[in-house]
Image (tube, rainbow, N blue to C red):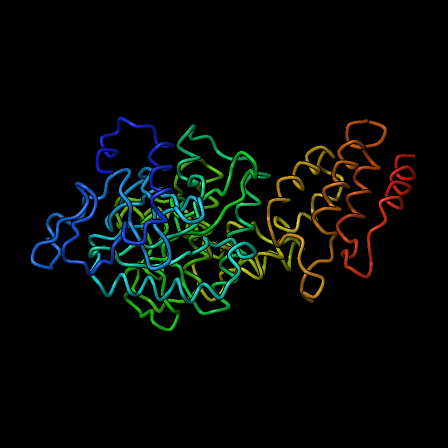
Length: 436
């Protein structure tokens, strides 16, 4: 079927052709078969060895096979220093996957990434907002990593208009990142490469701002990092990395702060092209004022003690001292994430309802009943119904107060379990009573 690679046939016809050929036991021979040269223009084998200068010749409509399935290359989503990312179709399951094809990295670098992906498999990818790793395999000298197919990156989303996101849109993104990094901390892994390009929207049309963390090519166990290691992109690099100081999981939280600022301002907070300019900007933004002797900026702890309010989450993520920088677990309890401050009546009911609606995409925003540290809230299905009720209340001026009261009740209702079902009729009566 090499004639199908000329682009004259429709993709659906090519896919169907390959799917029918899957039943042929020898259509996709073993990689060790010296007599097989693979699809036209795809690979070149000479005397049993890969010609490295011509290795990367994978094109659309080529078929790559692993021990478990066959992948049809449909398109290419992007490329980097490592190689390319191909959009592929699993011919056994008809599932679309993203295939990361390595060509430039050294073998030990590739094996390190595979090792970290296998370690991260211990985490639930849906609950912890981490890309689902399917499998790794080699094909004619190429190292391939298969992942679930996602939508587009936060970088791609932002560059569509370079318009800052609203706080209600930023909150679910940051919440999901905090959950992901809290999970990584639990298994002693540091991502070290957080940037908008590595945060993928799952399905922005159907699940707005549902995201997953991707690209663990530079991830490392926390005990493997040493002072002086150069990690993180320049514009998202923690000060302790720049200064060659001891490193910890706190560098990822600095990255979270930089991502938050990027979404807030529609541009990077720090320069991304020059370490010197980066440090100069950091000193300008974070440095203490020295023009007035005897005066200094209060620490976050002192600010909270004096005012009774927690400092802005962004400032807590960008604390210069990594030992005092907020952790993912602490950040998940910050008012910006829990939204308890929205129930003080200062915000309009419609704004509060919208905030909760955006947070509905977060898988663990409504945690399990068994989680002792979680805030007790209602399950997703019941909560969705009740949000509709709250939204209806908010539309009427004389019911605004009732809407806020209703939301206060929702945040602290117990979970639904098999033994204790929520009674919709009870909520209907409560709604009638609240609406007066």
